[in-house]
Image (cartoon, rainbow, N blue to C red):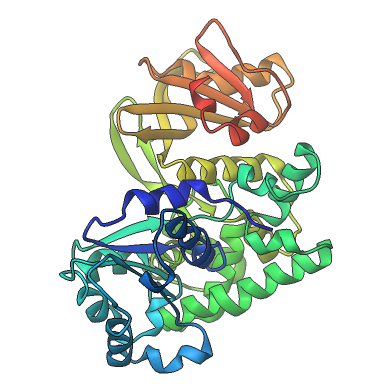
Length: 417
């Protein structure tokens, strides 16, 4: 079974020979190695690159243990250069090499070397690429399978596929398991034995029980506004545990840095400014989130919102939570200030979209509720409501477009409809 990852493959192709170290990052088991070692290698061969000009080393393989020594790796790679033509160096899990940055930087001034590496665990995060390569690293973030990618290997209807995707997520290996029991066991084990251990190892977390409980809270409340102070009060009142807001803030940053969770900040649409707190947190993969809470909460409203958020990130958008200040009258006729929320404000260059997620919109009052914040935005950018129901794409008199989750996820140009 080969799942095409054309979006990411094209990103690597576009970066060929750019003089930078191409660094593929992402949550564990999302397909980084497959992208570089299989799909990209196949592409190189298709354009005529000979095998002896593609130098591949899987540093996670025990057989290559000696190459985890930086000098041994450097000597090995140098010995693979056979002529003056371009050589492609592909290193998997490069963080297993001590002083790997020095090794990689050694090839920046080699004119016939083009370097691609993957990294994902507790020693290799996005901010490491930025700080350690100092402008000489070019990061390509890869996410778990999009729903469209998932469906290329799923044997079933679109409706059943989306249910499966929302439950067990998009880690590629999920598609190889036959039973729900196997899928559940895989995700639970991966979460506990890989992701959590990675974070604890990197940051030497002392309050392990509190960190685990914070994970449970975030998992149970995806898409809810929160902040470290609020969470600290929750620990105090519910768990009778005192934990400093600053510690919670650090823990949340660790989860984001590990690619497990993403933070969406609030943006004042009219005031054109960020509101730092509270924020929303979404999981990079729904299967991992569901496994964390033992598949107990099947609230489609929040799960669909998380899936939409992830899809927007995959498509390269910068995504915020929108806030629209309004003045309303209370029951006594007095004016008071309030705020309406837009689920997502999406920016990409000169493009901007305002998007609401509405799993069910089966009444006039519900439709008016979802449209309320969008109608208060006084600009010409497109405003969209995505529903969980199958329906034709249509636009109303207020210029608001409504489309189904299926149209949005399966059509990469859906926002232009």
